[in-house]
Length: 301
Image 1 (cartoon, one colour):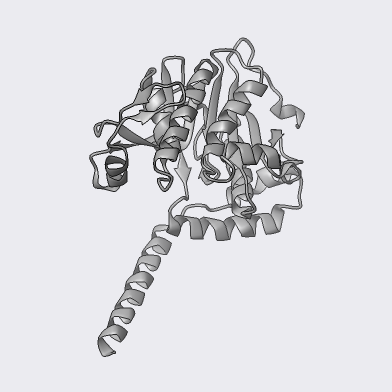
Image 2 (cartoon, one colour):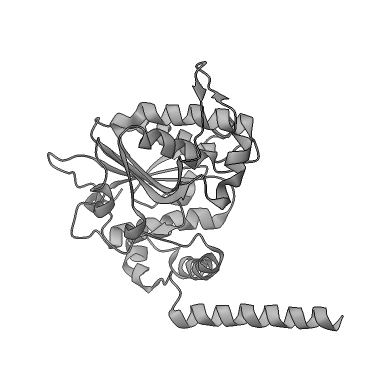
């Protein structure tokens, strides 16, 4: 790690920024690098967080100023419930980081998805995390909403947990997006509680993909205040945004990926991740034209 990124927070709390990547999709790994560049570019006037990556490919991050933990095949099998539910890996990676970084109870950990990037100082997000308050991306609303019908239909009876307790799902509970999860190290036991609920819910209804984010938000909201961080971060998780960002990320690393980290950081401002209004409108017009042509052909047939 370059010396300029080793600066300590004298008499201050440690701030840990965590990313997790697995599988062979290059965009996930390049996305982490892109996010790291954005973080360090926008906190030049403040102390940057310690950056931790947990992935299957340590060599990919060899020249980046990070701490890396490797997801071995055995760990991946264990964390994913024998490949039955890969989203559990995020929960287990949170626990693994907290267990291996020698953190104090009040130190802060912020986990970001690989398709996130910063346009402002990341310390604004860390400022929202304390022992009484945790952070997630977005409150998506109560389970009474139409998009959560599968929860209401699948979890009508109490769910038995591993400790012989039962969990009853209320339709008034809220779903939160887990694009980011921010907690203090004092919340370590809550990660295991969320994991226990996650496993029970997955066993009850294996086809529901979002039990990871629901479980962690349930546990955190029951143990302090849970707040949103949506306004302080950018992402390209939606299809149109992802297509645009992926093309530019690929181009950026094709041009600068073979240079040292410092050079990549220098050229980072040249990387555009957000579509211009003109590009956005052009895409919409193209889609409408395509739909119109398709409808015309259908009528002709």
